[in-house]
Length: 338
Image 1 (cartoon, rainbow, N blue to C red):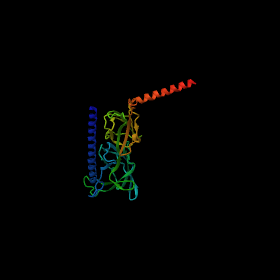
Image 2 (image 1 turned 135 degrees about the horizontal axis):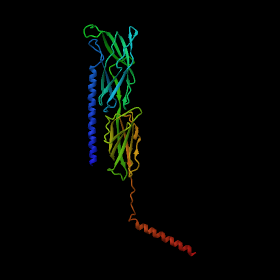
Image 3 (image 1 turned 180 degrees about the vertical axis):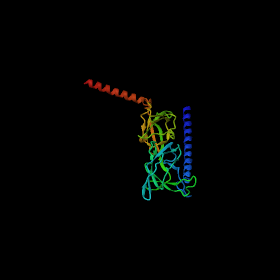
Image 4 (image 1 turned 30 degrees about the horizontal axis):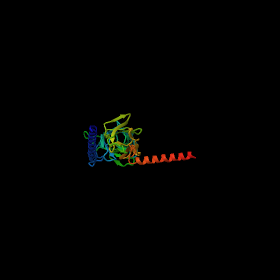
């Protein structure tokens, strides 16, 4: 009873933490989206020098209620090209030509400040920028190439003191020259629920069964278990593979919440010698690729009931026995009389 109370209390605490993460995720999304509405790449008050520029990252959670892990998104700015009056001109390089954007666990966005190169002449300069694919399970990285387009114009205030000779105005576009105001990524995770059922005329509702769930990332991915709610204290990790152990009675269940996509799982129950082999359904082993997956393990325990000989029938059995014996004796005597 004490063990059951501790498990119940632990599950209640885990549930409260998970609900709090959901609330923080909602607040983070609201805050970041509001911030985007006032941080744009265009100015309505005339031209000014845009260096350093602020580049935004937005993370979309595809399955509501799930929480993303902390992630550092890395970007590379390629070699630029310059054009003036239809003729090519040299484009100075970004130094450094890499930057990163940190997104915290449960947060839906982040930003980076990037210094533009120094230019020596007016023109339009285009630089490819690409996101470096990471390896976090459940995270979808953007393989597209985008472009930082810097239009360099003369500064009408130059040569006033402190004024630069040129103004650098930036636009971020995709391959179709469509303006963008941020880089986007998706994150996918779901819940895995395991139910326990027992059947049979000798099944005991107080019997406990040990169930082990093994979670393995697909090749090239790693599991960041920070936002995963295992709902058990018995979790181990070896070589990137996670193993969680649970104890259930008949009619009970557990749920692993916020399990990322890009992992496979296996649910195995330790054989109880008093029961038949566990019966698994098709979802006991598979890939985490849905918002919710449920599997059920069934154990059966039957026994043969020994009813014995009914005393009410005993007189009739004895009479039949004597009658059979008498008929046999009579047949034997007649045969030997001839």
